[in-house]
Image (cartoon, rainbow, N blue to C red; front, top):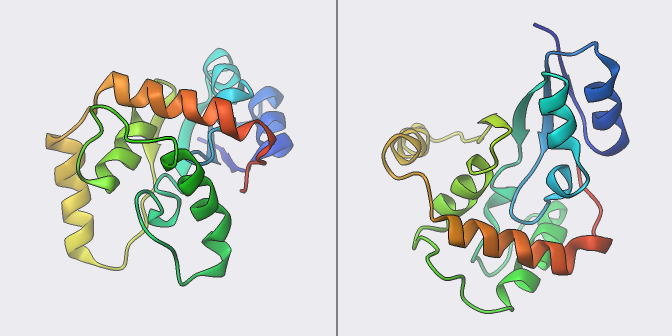
Amino acid sequence: FVGCSGDNEAARWAVDSGHFDSLQTSYSLVDQHARTRGLFEAARSNGVGIIVKRPVANGVWRRAGSPYQYADEYFRRARAIQDMGPVEDEPEDPLLTAIGFVLAQPEVDTVIVGTRNPDHMLSNIEMVENRLPISEEAVEELRRRFDELGNEWTQLG
């Protein structure tokens, strides 16, 4: 199998080109353009599998801030979405919310969650095997909030 990693126009070209079997692209609570701009639908239509990179957006969901400047935009977006109030039926675990949200997208085949900690990896596996899916109501509300706020946000890639 041949895959491509990309975002925005490069991702759309890869999906439409007929050259690739899979696409690795960004998608998260705070970066939903792969959904809103039809990339996932095009991938499904063209038989291209989806691997999501950055599914937890540097762990920004329900956190106060980041010591990493490159994640500042993710935090800004997370705060804007969270400022709209609590999400009904959202899991208590913010990582479960983030991963569950991404895996609720039917076109997503798998996600890449990076960690250097073996215990975190085992916890992520347990989460996926035993605590998913998250509620459809929570997923729909998080999509609605991004649709309302994120129209001008760019896919970060």
